[in-house]
Figure 1 (cartoon, one colour):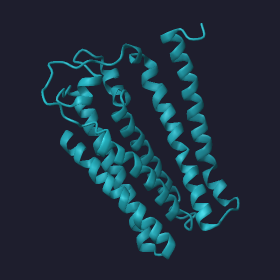
Figure 2: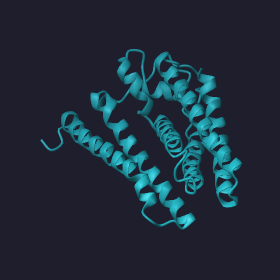
Figure 3: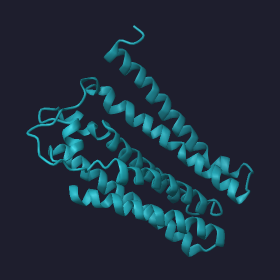
Figure 4: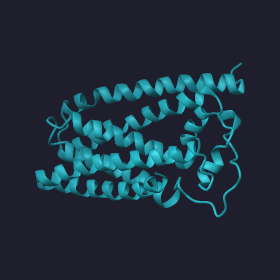
Length: 236
């Protein structure tokens, strides 16, 4: 599963590149086959990112200390809840978590707009694919969570004690859900500019996404304040 996860990252990157290319080309040339191909490629990107995420979680839960990320942020005696949340405890895992949420949001956007806003959707899909390309390329080329160590340590270094708090399980995911959610209104805004459809139609399409992002960011910031107070005593 771990090897499958690592390979899935590269396939996801290729799928995202294809999706961006054919989506913009399909929108420009008004070719439905290219537009459909781009949307299918983004669904495939989601599947590959899910596989990669399952691969990393498998490595964390099985304590595969041959992987640098696992050895850096977990240990054999780390409680399981913090072993799971170590997924976003470091840079590589956080980037993968970001890509996972973005690919899920992208698939939901494509599915809910499969019969609406069809003039905008090729550019929405292309823009979201470009964002995915950035994160997936960063993961694959610069911050791979599946990087192997030259030797296998007997135990990992464990998670930072300040991160061993219930806030670690709920604060970062809420912020990610909020920050990543802003990508959807952004993509619709780019699509509206490219198609010169600057009426209120695209605003209606993103209203719920904007409210969702606002909600999760608000919850995440409030939880962050509570976490900082109980862990570090800020504001006491």
